[in-house]
Length: 553
Image 1 (spheres, helix red, strand yellow):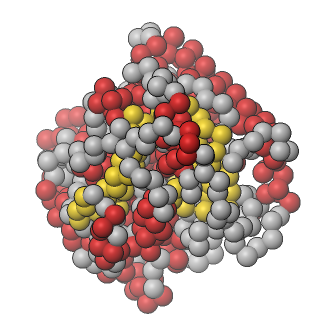
Image 2 (tube, rainbow, N blue to C red):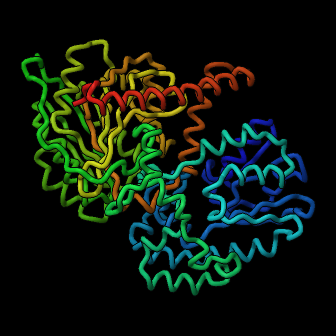
Image 3 (cartoon, rainbow, N blue to C red):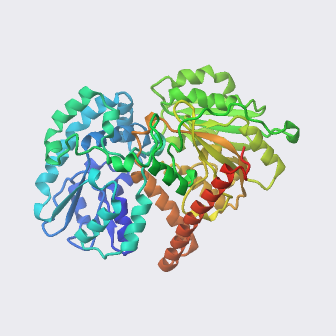
């Protein structure tokens, strides 16, 4: 939410500052921010955001409007567990954070939340003591998550900022995302309230209710108060076992599938027989190196590895990099060791770090990575090799996406419109699990992923491909299967690293266009226009495919 505020302030040239984010980026634990950091604060003229807890020094807030945003601490503790365990970016030079990560890996989620619950109660009491009631406005996350535009409008009024309805709507639309699936390494979490009940044991919830009772009662977090807004959830998302409802079908006719990571129809069996391209067309088989980064995906990694090995591609180099999983991942990897060129299971600093480690062992002419819960469509590698053989000018190949559920059933399709580079300045719609590129291009752009990115590392890589004048080719085939599963549904928070990283990439594109703010604003409008154009083109392409007027195999 503070990202929305900062975006609004930036558009009106109002200085905003986050002491905690700045400290974190510098590798300084927030608990170690010293009292003299209070010099960063001035009585007026700035917006201060991103407080994780009240600082170790007092602030003169009597004449300053204060905004306190609270969330059900039970949901927050669940989110913290997954952040510490895997997805949160590691502060620069922070050995303490890595120690916390190792500690979290040794605990169950129930043990973790009970150990950390007291922190929230202490923080709550500190805010009660320090924030002046006469200038304090408190919002509950659960009350604003489904109407961010109204919240931002109200906040602008409370803070006395210039009113800008168009900007308010634009920011709210951009941040109004409700991911139905998680990606543990990308820090994407489920955002719907009351999610802790799907992750914690009943006895754990009861203990949390006792420990946090003072907080829960003060902010009215009764069972009824956090229950998700059924009018929002049940009419826009299909749930397995339920009939599709009319509002969902209506929305499904308006938006293309490639703008939604959710069930698009009831589960269907995947087609098992896929016609491969005639091997006579392949004058040679270029070596394809695929890196599989993994962490605690033991129930899915076997299907991932089999989907690669069963391609039966004669010049395959398979590399697996595991982040010292605590489940049965290593056992599965060992079963397929004879098909793997190199593998390791050790602590790493996140997904990008693991992929870079794997790529350093890759010797293929064509490179890719495949996450350990995704799969390749049968025949995919032959089709990719065929395209690279046919066109020496092609640098990057990608295809259409199949959405699959935990059982490996087809629950949706991403049918992509023809490739246009400009949309990549605003959003990344290239399905990562379908993307392959030449090794010489990889070396030209630096030979590594940017490890400072936790969520958008693939988009950042694609932007460097574009800057290197790479030639992209969208193949008329489904190449990859993106899995949505239960483990993902309670561990997604796109509103932290996700939005921050996407905004970094968009801003970089604007700054390359011009250093003048007026021209950058014009460029931003062009980016938005390209997004709406993409949505229209994607829906039209999808309709042609559904009418069998466009062949995608």
